[in-house]
Image 1 (spheres, rainbow, N blue to C red):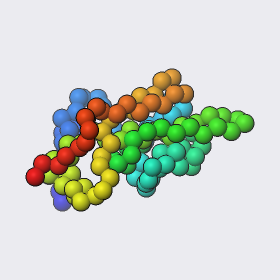
Image 2 (image 1 turned 180 degrees about the vertical axis):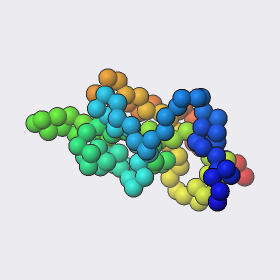
Image 3 (image 1 turned 60 degrees about the horizontal axis):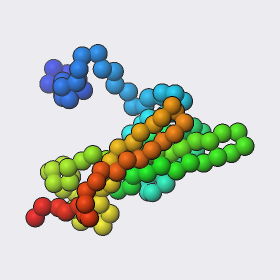
Image 4 (image 1 turned 180 degrees about the horizontal axis):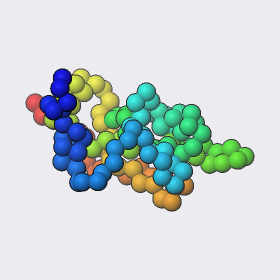
Length: 130
C-alpha cells in the first residue's frame, strides 16, 4: 500500500505534536510495555522476572493487580494495569463468550519503587448489553 494512504500514529490518534512513540519505555528503572506475549494472572510478574526489573503491562484485560518479588539484592514488582475498554464497543465483541470479564482500572507507580493497581468502581458486576 502506498505510504500516502497510511496514517501515522499521531494522525490516527490525533495526538499532540511532539509525542514520541515506542514499543517500550523505561522511566525510573521501571519498564513500561504493552505486554504482548504475557498471559495469565501472573503475566506481569513473569515479565518483570524476565526483565530482571520492575515492569508494567496492560496486555491482559482480565487481570489487574501487582505482585512483588524480593531477593537478597533487590525488590521488583510486576504491575498489570488491567484495561480501560468499553466492553460494549464493537472491537471488544470477541470477549462476550469468555468467562473472565475485563478488569477495568489503572496503574500508578510511585518513585519507581511502588506499584499500585486502582480498580474502577463498577458496582456488583459488568454486563454486556443485549
